[in-house]
Length: 269
Image (cartoon, rainbow, N blue to C red; front, side, top):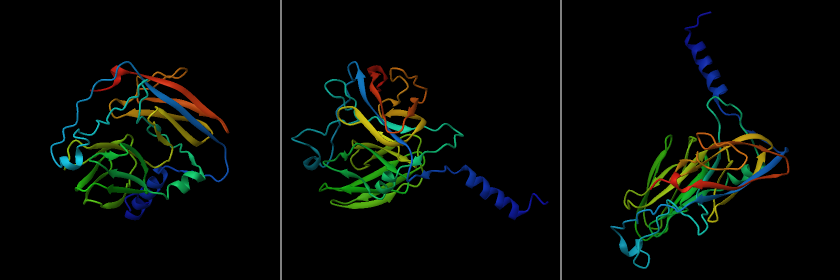
């Protein structure tokens, strides 16, 4: 056999490529459970510098004041907003989850981010590869939405009232940045994944992720001002260096991780 044959080389390359692709199963029937919890910042949050609005002030100032710095939103009782909860796969791990039909249907709906009063709304978003990602501008001034991730980049000019649909082609291990190069103070974060099993904590610090395949999985936690939450304190769980824990999801049950405490010193100023 000629191992240098171009046909053989191409065949082996194709086989390798097929084997290395993650194999998701779209399951119509199966066993599913849920995961929930809440994030609390333990201690006084650092004070972030105010945003500097240096142009288009008639649109961008709100009652004469700049928009709130949304890189760190903490409630009166420490509730931490915009923590990402996402499935974690170690290098070489070819185990991939079945996909619940509800997620298959939801993927046909677009995810939106708006340029609104010179801020991105919402500040943290999650979009799947191949899903429509609608970039909007409801302001009366022009913006650009510049998405910068490890594997993806888009830089879209948006006139006043404009809207553009894009799709992200490659999954990311961690969230990336969204900025406006015209208005330098504007920023947001986006997570791009192949699988739908990710959530973002709300104003009250809580999250709930439904219809996860029953079984043992790893989930990790990330916040823009801390990165991977390796210092997160979760009773009964050991948090790894990538901010991950191992959980067992049981059919028909909701696993409640309770209040998960993040020391304030883990937050970067």
